[in-house]
Image (cartoon, rainbow, N blue to C red):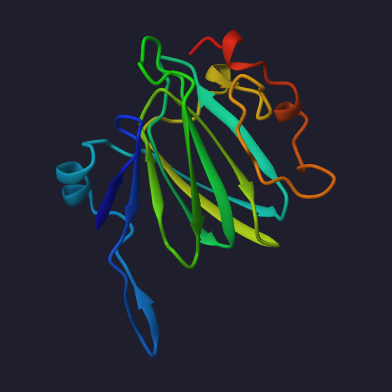
Length: 180
């Protein structure tokens, strides 16, 4: 696995070794022993999958402490622009973000440590997104940041007419109002 460090400590882009031939391809998505040695010794406890049409923007979501989640995210089908924002109190990169294109073609993954808000914009007509979490979902700890917060100024490549959003994602406060 090729590990690409980002400008934000702990936030990594992972490129698995893909073995392909005339039948198709094979790659190891997750190997606990190798992941612990090369990335982080996390104990993933929940796997999630979502399917979205093109132009859907999900996020920016996080869970408040003590239920913050580390995540390993990837695209099974389609293409997304994945965004992770540092919301760790006292972090020298607080409010900074990374963007990575994840697709069924490049098979890249992003490891997002605890203390980040996460979201993505779908770029293909049909998209299947999977993520492993090291903490169970707790509805009472659910929170988010406005995807269009001018303080963050994330340059989303929005579709004509704007993104398709959930009602909840329309109402998140800006990063200056968060309680991580």
